Length: 167
Length: 424
Ligand code: SF4
Image (cartoon, rainbow over all chains, first blue to last red; front, side, top):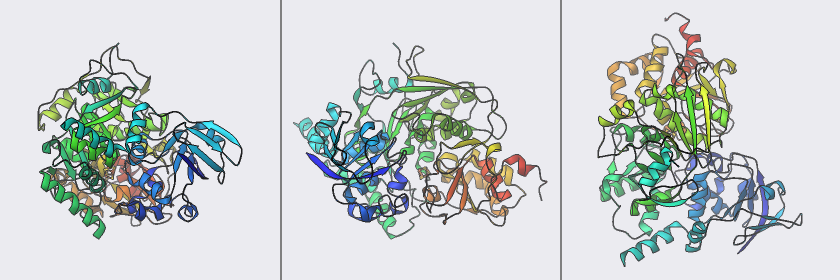
């Protein structure tokens, strides 16, 4: 599967409080959360973002709270994947569990600017910057993570596991 | 080769002789929790699995604390949904007036114990590491599945050993040690790792101050922040434990990704300047900015010993006319104890607003939201932009004595600056 969209670029330590501020945590669906996504660091993000766009950020993306509302809000806003130098571990789990692809690749982060057009191939971890005509390789997913994603996330994976245990 | 405390606990929960950093394991869990913000999503995911009940109803807790007593209709609907699920399943549940903030409540009420694996749909689940258990925060989907199966996948983290030598100065406690540490290693200094706290300074810390330290392990990016159970831990736990438990300790030849040593003799009260817990500086080097609000509470520093420290500074004094000082005991047991000891009277007489237990202002939920440009000194754990209200508000993190002194002075201040003036 190839994802394609424009880059929205951010620095290090983008925390879950700015991805989706706590004042909106009484909302639970991607649609309700999307208009507030990133509003505390980038007020125009929700208006600017187009389906398929890619967030590119420095280290420790998604640090802070365990709120799953963060990857949910990004998905709701139409973000197709996040490329960062590193991710906070709870955000990493949440994103995989909810089916928001995330890729670790420092070179792609340094080699991309806001507005660049990216094409991301998940299976191979290939990130192509179409604007700059360059290509990068992300850190491959461990096999277990691929299995989770193939199953369609943790809930589907667990459902199958529970069903096979019953038999 | 020996194993670290985290490795010992994880190995004991996946029927392996040993585990090594980087390995993916399927791990039994002893206790699972969610709160009014994270439970609705977790319950939704749980329902999709099609199982009739949770793996063990005495090992799953639903704690209303973030927006409760409910701040608006949406929050009320979420809390109601969680409560109905808890009652239907017969889970551990505390209604308002009998509970409090999850990470203060659960160890205090004996639900989480040494040697256990605990997973919670809240990042500060790592608090319980102070008891010598492997406790870590996750998202709602992970927790929804763990509630059904009683296990979870985990990657064994490398361990970072932190050794603290020396004796602490007056007005310096666990909060200052952990802020200093995060300032040193950075907010991703322990990313994907388990922190293991050691040394004579830790042995001398009372349990509450240890819980404060482990609480903030996540602020360094850590998966868990563990301490080796000792006599202090055992006497705390024995008085509370709800079930059998088996403490673990690290092997003498355990392998650590890194060992760092600190001497706490020169450590001052420490504050984290806006907008990161990693911006830690000694109080003497912090700017004496004027402030608008003080918040004393939260799962970091809302315990009885914290309130005692704040009351010691505030007794017989008045909160500065410009400042709102909000005091929130973290649990009802703490509230009652503080009431009986006269601490709440000291706060009320000093001009503080004292509330029933809630997370409230800690996450910018309600009960003390900051306006644009306002400054707050808080005993909480995070000061990211927008954490307590407007993204252009500023939050300074400090210990309860610093917060109380700042409330009296009307600016960032240490207890000695305030105690120097005679009580009125
Ligand atoms: S007091 Fe603050 S940090 Fe603790 S659980 Fe509540 S919101 Fe989270």
